[in-house]
Length: 100
Image (cartoon, rainbow, N blue to C red; front, side, top):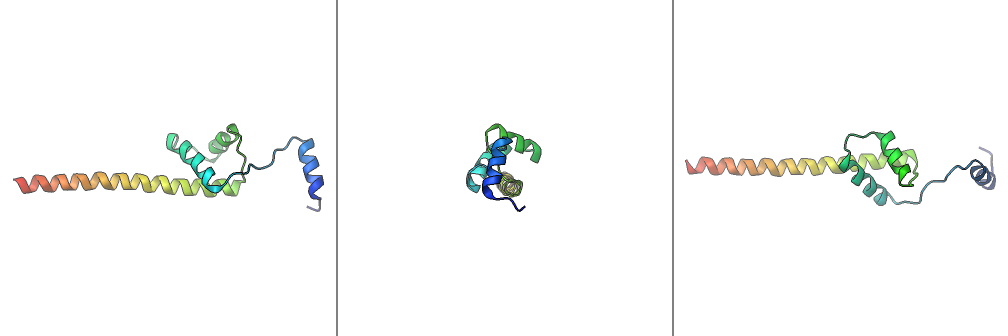
């Protein structure tokens, strides 16, 4: 851009532009996990709005990577729950067959 850091900071302050939040990936994942567990079908824009409402501002790339990690985690948890349910039904079905 050709601008010094001081100039960018001064202009950001003048135009009331906030800087990015200092938050780790794990903390961001936890915030998103809590939100997506309650609202699993929201998109990136709604998630961004939620983060802004709790005063978290992160780069779009970090947000997208976090969404991907959290969606994978929620999918695996859902898959494991379904697998346990299916295993229970299978065992119950086998028990029913052996008693006849």
